[in-house]
Length: 117
Image (cartoon, rainbow, N blue to C red; front, side, top):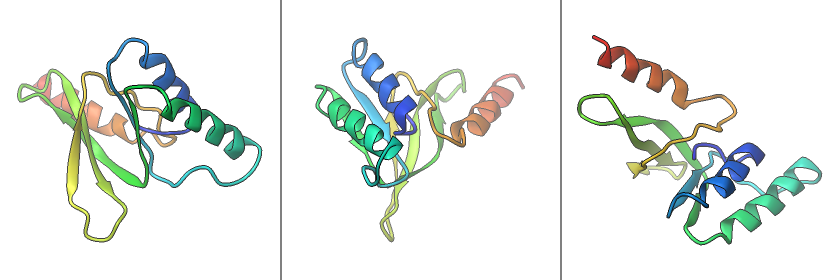
């Protein structure tokens, strides 16, 4: 799950019924503020208590990974915001892009273009 806003958290909750593990990757630190941030923090706390759900904060999503033939999305490339952090990959059977800016969409379009060549 790319994006830990309300949409991403609720999607993670729904997906936890069908998948053994759900990982939510969020760019920012969350849980500060009132109203929407307070609601988001409350949902986030509850979702984090669901067995099999992992929340990863303070990470930049760099793009998607694909199978060698480009027919399947296989995960998400990310880097922690800490200075000098190395790129890592979270492997996934399903990637849902709930990120506000839709970061994964350009990568997906490129993967489809390569596959259709």
